Length: 69
Image 1 (cartoon, rainbow, N blue to C red):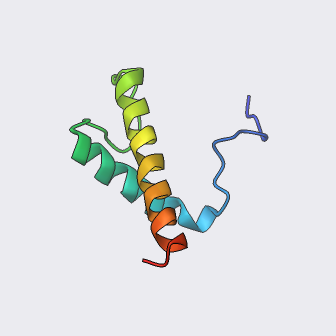
Image 2: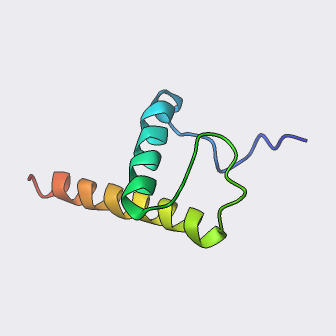
């Protein structure tokens, strides 16, 4: 059953490919063996570290932009 109110929907669907590329880059930086598709073999900690670091990097970039750098 599909949940149409999912919080996993992209606010800007056109950015999906760029976000997937960013996710793979972050996973590579962190040494998390993330693959395209199913990653159920990874721990919650591994998957969470990728998402958390993505958010950290996005916030840092936004702060730089807001500071005019």
